[in-house]
Image 1: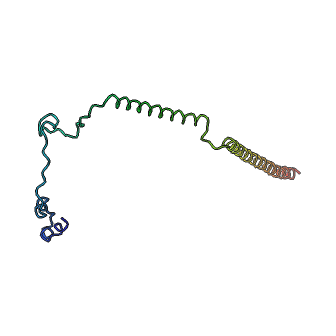
Image 2 (image 1 turned 90 degrees about the vertical axis):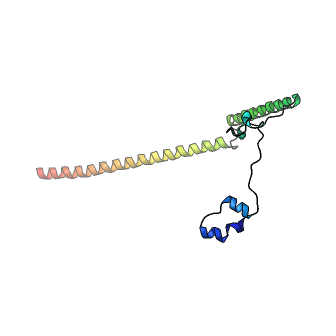
Image 3 (image 1 turned 135 degrees about the horizontal axis):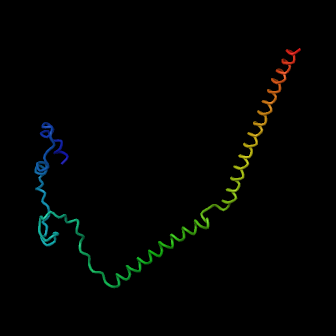
Length: 155
């Protein structure tokens, strides 16, 4: 079919070849859909517009042993699934998924964070005390100069 698509007649017209024309040139006959049995079609009539893919194929009746085996397998799966869930809950509850020294590491982190907060608070208090002392010194210096100028003016 590749050689047909590159045919000069199709290139000259600028149109893609019609599928039937390509099939005829390739020596292939027309494509025909398989015949549909009227009894197998949904609704019992051919061409009533229903899609055949909607109706599942009829299942063979299962024997008693097969049904019992299937039920036991289903029950076994449900038990396994529930036990798996209970196991996950217990692992989370007892913290078995945590590293060996998890609590010690967390406690150390908390201690470091508290120490850092304490250090920052003490540093802020020292700065505030230094600023306050500096402000008093400035007031004392300005107040002393002001009282000296008042005393000089009075004399």
